[in-house]
Length: 182
Image 1 (cartoon, rainbow, N blue to C red):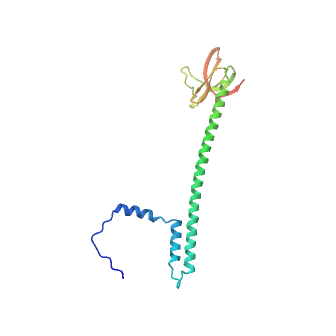
Image 2 (cartoon, rainbow, N blue to C red):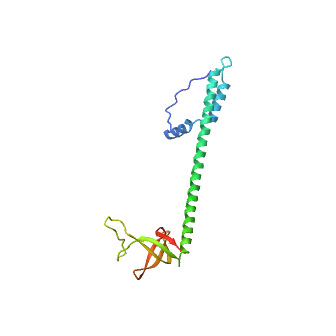
Image 3 (cartoon, rainbow, N blue to C red):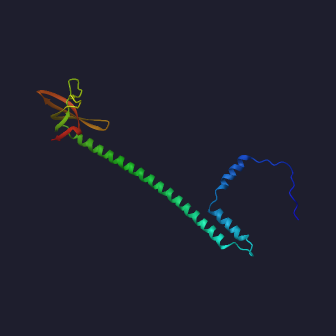
């Protein structure tokens, strides 16, 4: 015959350890579910076995839990794949831009000594763009020879020497302003 447990004195418990232990025990996994099910089957009364409905409900819950876990893993893999794909696309785009810029620079360097026709902003004596009464920039056409090419912030700029009203002038021309190169 068992003896009752007697109170031998106060019992103290560390609050941090029980909180930590409780957190880890809050999440039950597949293995815990199977252990619980096996334990239930092991200790059931053979004269009053567990009802089929209850057993089927537990198995359905287990199946749903397993499917949700698989979906979560699938979403994690999908997210990782998409992040990798976006990273690769970004690198590819950056590489393509660099190649286009290198090609543009290479082509512009080969412009030295060639004749260009360009439409540029007309400049006043101080080198500022001239505007009309409506405040719009006035443009003019120039025809000259590319004397040099310089690159500023990755943008090729042609230094064009041309004659206007009998005076030889030099100015910077952007590739977007060039109409024709011969």
